Image (tube, rainbow, N blue to C red; front, side, top):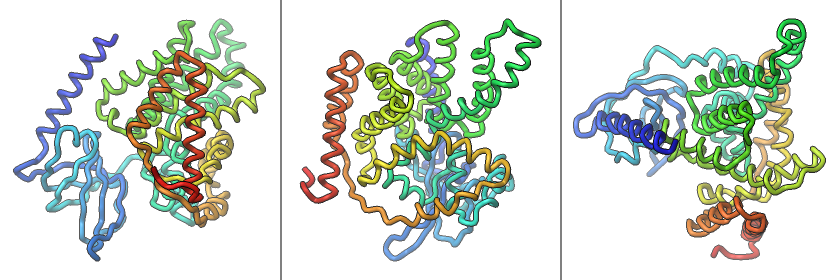
Length: 408
């Protein structure tokens, strides 16, 4: 299996290399791209627009000093050149544009997004739900709140959302299925049939999301898990997680450089550790413990990539629990044109002044912590030590926040 994945990976890297070589380096040329995000920056007392573009599955950045209207979601033809390495191509490239022109066609989901926007007086909230439902780039205000309250894993579409959607779809389909099953196909298996239907629906959603890396990982995990369950094999195992990760990288090499994908894989890894070692107990206590343990477990890894910290991030544990109900509820409310009924609460969150500090976890400490996680696959004691280290790290961040210690 590893050999097959290696061959697929090499083939995909070869295709990406040819795309990279076709970019305009010395001689100007043009690319067609979609504008994912657009925001203003100021440097040397000069204000300009920064645009995040997506072209053939890769990210480019470009700038414009013209006074342009909001173009997020629109398609453009950009004429210019770039100068990025092959590795940078997998992350993001800066494209020096000489001119760019707006193309007439728009994204297929625009009517739905406009319908969502019409339900909210504050367009910041409309942006929030377009992020939740369609993986759009989060607005600057909500991104700040998300960073300071530790809500990124909730607002960015990932396996958490896939799990909620799967449960929601199962709840909708199970009664009609049972009604038909009792009359026409009593020999069929309910879980297999509904599970297959859900995977088909979620694949369509994955296509609409344009194969967002974190949701792609989650969907691949769901497919592999369903096949193992169908075969009567163990689902929650680390070999499956590794196989899913390697398969995603083999098919889409750029996800190896995507922070969302990396954190998504890490999150599932710590979920598996919790399931392996935490004793079964009352459902509510188990679910609460699950959210607490995963929150602290992944905090050191998050701080290797992102510096933002506030003690108020503990609220994300409660939000994670409430989100299981909130997410499908907001889908239903938006379908019936009532998506704005809870906007006053969202406005209150946006208005919060959240104190914070910045701290990056040094690479060598991140490596040691990751090593403890690897050891925890084989040892309960290593898992306990890992959790103690995670709690100690959080306590250290709190001490930094309150000025009790200095940055080492």
